Amino acid sequence: MKSIFTKIIAGEIHAYKISENASCITILDAFPLRLGHTLVIPKMEIDIWHHLPESQYFSIMQEAFRVAQAIAKVIPCNRVSQHIIGLEVPHAHLHLIPINSIKDCDFRAPKPTFTPAQFQATALSIQSALTPL
Image (cartoon, rainbow, N blue to C red; front, side):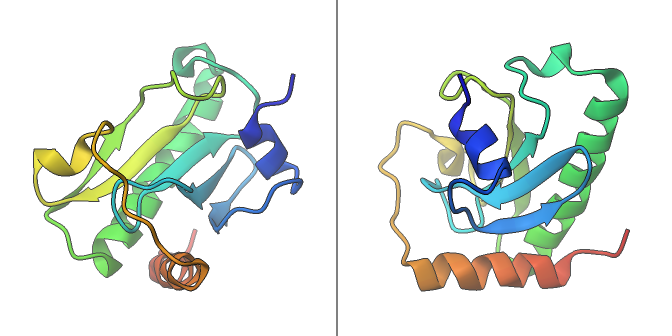
C-alpha cells in the first residue's frame, strides 16, 4: 500500500516542496513543530532508514545538509535539529526542525498552525536560500 509520502512524491497529494533530486524530495511538514519544519523523504518507498542502499542514504543526507543550511539562513533559530523517528508513517523520512531549545523538538507539544500563505512564503524563502548543486 502506498504511503502518504509516496502519494506526495507522485504528485497525487499537494505539499509545499523545497527541493527534489533523483533520490529524495524535501517538503514542509504539514503538521510542523515550528515554522520551517521540513521533511527529507527518500523517493524509494522503504520503511527503515538503514535499509536504504548506501548510495541513496548518502545522497539523501547530502540534500538534508543543503536544506538545513538554507533553513538556518532564513528561519531565526540557534540550530537546525535532525530527527529520524519513523513510527508515524511507514516510509523513511528525516525531520529538519529549526530550534532555539530542546523544547522545540517535543513531538507531543501542541502544534502551531499556519496559513497556506505562510507555508508558501516559508517554502519559497528556504528555496531561495539553497546553495546551487
